[in-house]
Length: 199
Image (cartoon, rainbow, N blue to C red; front, side, top):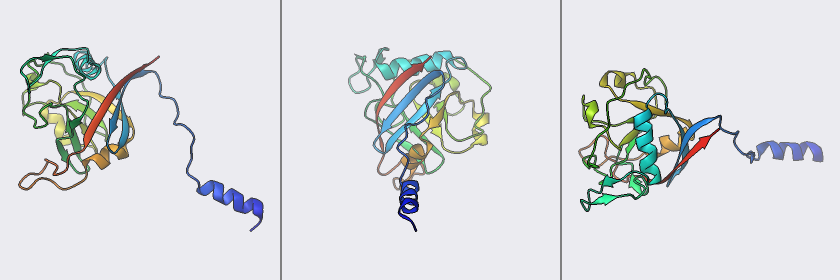
């Protein structure tokens, strides 16, 4: 092997350090977690009230009832919360300040519908009580594979993971608490959410 050929081979083995391609115009949420970052494109035209609520809570621009104090808070809701529900390779859920799934912010969202389906990995949707779309609030979940069985449950899709799906999948891995199917024994952490509007 010549010196030049050897250098070329070494260069090909080296991981690419090129920055990722620029995201197209749209509104995005970047989720910084203890296992890395993933990015979801938001769909304000398809779920305007739900997306506005998510963005305002993420940026600390909407007051909500803090379940721990009973008083109103303007803190950025999603910072430091746990992915308190997960099924490996299937879904992740976050957005409850009590990290239990039972916490309330003192309000629910107006009913919205769209025609999006759980026909691909990476859907971002609002969690709700079974069969009750009027119970939607701050809790969100991400699907990590196509889950067409969710289409009949009335969940509202508000976004789509466009970068970092392997990170989201990694966040779902690990053992469950004894006696449960979707409560991680060692839940991962959502450190922060950053909203970006690209023109």
